[in-house]
Length: 409
Image (cartoon, rainbow, N blue to C red; front, side):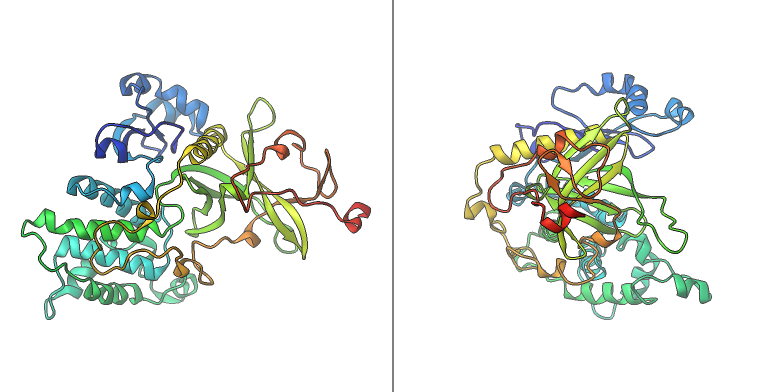
């Protein structure tokens, strides 16, 4: 199970930024609360899998949980920038790197190359002109770039399946980015200490990703009807929930399908006892130019966990004090090869970016609400949770009002 509600720790920097989690072979994760006892959870692991996953009974019976040290979902990014302990920075860097290489954090090619270049600096040392660096990169390319950017196919079929990049482009772009990584003048002679600025630079770059630090859940959504036969079906997705919002990510195509801040959505879940285990996300949109409310249905046995986590993140956001300019800044030390992060990151909003929403790829229920009735398409659940809206300041979610033409239609 990917993440569940919990509380941020209090003691030292490592305890605050990290929290133990229990994980199974099937990549189901549970972030532990301070009061949890790992031994007792291990004894109850099969019960948890049966309740919150779709794993076959045979797999559940054979599964063994493992205790891991992972980033605390509820630790704010602005406080992460205030950490100076090199071991804590290394732990945060290693986890972020693992998420990037596994494409759990979808990144554009340029961003993958920039992040991979920092990994090169950490693992291979400073770039030295004339050294056989290209060979070292080629042999360990999957240590620096996500696997889908490292595949080298052959023939017409591979060419037809190629997505986004030409053969060798990632490798050459990685080498160019490696050359551009700057060193810090007067850095400490100790190797591990000298790497701290590069750990920080990697984390700063990851902070630009809207889903950094999220808890991840497994689910499926309906495919839009396509073609003459109206074939739809379902596609696997991962749902990333952080202190900032919710992102639905295509597990196969490695790009974002929907990204919403908490101010932009309403949500609820239904349990198997009611109909089926579903997380509902409701947000504003348009249908052929007409403003409508859109309802996305995410099938997952983890719907209850996701709903609870969303609610808890919103409670934390409402209780948090407004960040001061000093807390929102890039931090006391500049990272090598990178300037302080701006308030906006236009590279993440460029057309075609993998972190931009692709609402046209979603199959949603579109409707206009009037009182208790739905005028367009009436979903099975049409009462209680439409009134569950947030008031988090300007830009809050608001139900679209019906027009005369819609009432008549």
